[in-house]
Structure formats: C-alpha cells, structure tokens
Length: 486
Ligand SMILES: [Zn+2]
Image 1 (cartoon, protein in one colour):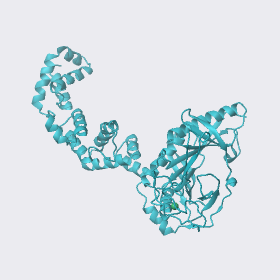
Image 2 (cartoon, protein in one colour; image 1 turned 45 degrees about the horizontal axis):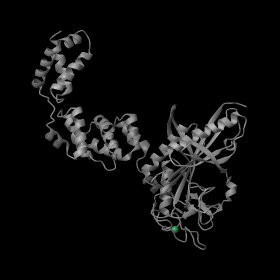
Image 3 (cartoon, protein in one colour; image 1 turned 90 degrees about the vertical axis):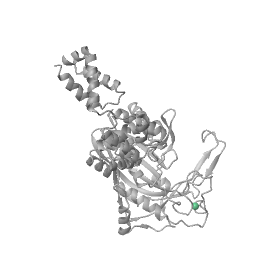
Image 4 (spheres, protein in one colour; image 1 turned 60 degrees about the vertical axis):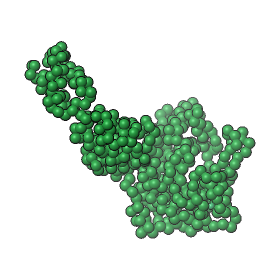
C-alpha cells in the first residue's frame, strides 16, 4: 500500500435560471418575496394537477450547454427522483436521469502547467425544492421549522463535471471560469449567498498504485458550500482528513459532509445515497423533450460573445494577458473600456488608467462600473489632455480625483485650478539653468556618472514649477544643459 495519493475532485454546480416563471407552472420566479406568495396548486404538489414545461427555461439551459461546448441531445426526457423531505411537497423532484439535456462539454482553466480542459459529463434540467427556515440556531435544537415554497419549482440546471480536478485551486478556477461564462449568457443571477448558484464537491484520494475505476473509490461529497473560497477551504480540509485516515490504516466512509465556516472543517451529515435509493422512473405527466435542429440553431445564434472570444479580441488589440483577464472578469468594466478606446485609440494608455487609477477610485468609493461616476466620455477627455501635453500624468491623477468628488468635467477642473502643464521650452530652460547653477555638487555627481543625481535635479525643477512642467521636457533640457558642463 502506497503513502502517495492523487487528489480527485468532481464538482456538481446547481444554477437557478432567471426565467419569468417557474419550470412547470405560471408562478413568478422571484427572489425575496413574502413566504409562500409565489405558489399555486402545481408547485404545491396538489393532487390532479399537471406540469407544463417552460420553454424559456429550456432555451436558457440549452444556451448554457452550448456555451460549455456540450452536445445538446435532440431527445431527452424528465424523470421523477423520489425522496421525502418537508421542502419537497410532491415527495419527488422532476429531474432528468438517464437522458439528460446535454453531455460531454468542457471548461478550460489555466493551471500552473498551462491550459487544461476540465470535462463536463452532463447538464440536466430539474426543479428546485422549497426552503426550510429553522427556528433556532441549528436543526437539532430548533423549536420548529417554517416551510417557504416560493422556490419550489424554480428551474435549475445541474452541471456535473468529470472528476478531473486535482487540487483545491483547480476546483476554484473551474468555478470562477464557469461563473464567468454563465454571466455572459445572463441566464442566472449566479449569487451563491442567495442560493442562485450552489456547489457540491466530491473529493476522493486515489492511491498511486490503485488500478480500479474512479467510481469505486470511496467518495465524500461536501454539500452546499456558500462561497468559492469555502469550496476551496472545504476541499483542503477534506484532503487532509482523508489523508490522515488512510495513513493510519483507516477506511474512508462514503458519505455526505457539511462545511462549517467558523472552524473551516467538514462534518458528517449522512451516508451518501446511491442512485437506486431515489427510485428514478420516467415522469408520466411530461412528454419527452424533442429539440429540432432549427430551434437549436436559433439558440446557437442567440449566444453572445463568450469569454474566450473576448480574450482573443483583447490580445489582438494588444492588451496584456493579465490586464485582459481583469476586463474579461467584469463585463461592465470591459464595456466601459471599449467606449473609452473608441474615443481615445491609445489602448495602452486607456487600459493603464482604467485598471490602475480609475479602478482604485471606484473601489475606494464602493462604486461599480455598472453605474460609473465619471462616464466614458469624461475619462476620454481627461486622457486627451494627457496626450495633448496639457496635463502631466501626475496632474491628471489629481484632476480625476476631483472629477470623482465634484462631478465636474476634466476641462472645468483644469480651468478652475489653473492646472496647465508648462510646455514652453524657454520658460522651462530658464528654471533648469537656475537649478543647475544652484546645485554644483549634484551636477558634479552626475558628471562623474551618478545617474541618480539627475532625478534630484528633475525634482527641483518640478518643485519650482509646482509640478506643472512637462517631465520629459524637463529631462531633455536638463541633459542638454548638463552636456555643456562636461
Ligand atoms: Zn406554481
């Protein structure tokens, strides 16, 4: 028996679809309403009612599958998954079992050894359950539980990865990229804290001399962790726990474990169900789901630009990979960038300003690029003042801060504060000569090869001009004057 193990991680991600109505009835699909106000006989599981499939949900699920490079099955079907729990009024959930909507996709992640595709085994559609609100800290000591069925019947897709991730970081990267792709599709709010995106992680350790199938490895499922960071923490803890058990000759029990945020540890919840515990059978009240090639083509054409296409485009525009990634992760920021670049075609200048000074102000003031305080035209005018030489970079930073404070235009701030960069050759040369004369020791240092001495002289000139002299002009003129001393 070896002491070496490979970590094997698979993720199951549930995503609530942002449809107008629920999956099988006309109730509104809305978060944060009064308990049980968004319900009807269908989603309450009354006898004799019939489900009707929501076409919008099928379209959104299909777009997700296409964006994740899946094969969408022209024939799929719905099945009943039976289990008993108070948040499930019918005592079964309508899901898809052996013929899911889509299969065989992938998400590309960046690992330490380059890009890697993480396989997606399947994507299926299902309805969400309701929500229990326990009256107490925990279920164990609660006085009771209140059932809210507003969420019952809300459309979900479950995205099941192949067990192809080998570290907690890879799992996190997969989740980040998955969420980025889905965010471009605008099919879900993707809020983990509100439950519109939920993640379960399957973790096992494969001894390096193990030759059996991955499916036979004892697997632990960590359920419903509420943030990407906690998914990573939960997996880290679980790897340590399992490794210790194996190294002391103990067995890993196949089970479902919860994650405790405060201690960063996982705890046993229940032994894991097998598929046959759910007694799946075809949903008799719904016909098979048949998708025509024309309809699928419409969905393909409805796909927006996806993150990888945007990465390619930004690379073509000469944006550095690291900067491009920041833009790709925040579409509002990217759209803002695109508007400014349209007005000021200096891509490098725009990107630098947007990702450094501008972003710093946005973050410091708790603002967002969804509703920018200084609009794209405003930033473009400021950058034009740098390009024309009216403002130095340093002055422009001050102007931008003032624009954020007062809402004035760049031109108005410049005029009010008298911030015009001195570009007049003769005016600067006069000051340069005076500084050189006043600092003979520093000049000597420079002439004996100390390049740093020049920076001091530049600083003196900038001080005398209150920072308004054009720095590269000061530099050039200083070298010119010093050359006459050599
Ligand atoms: Zn309903």
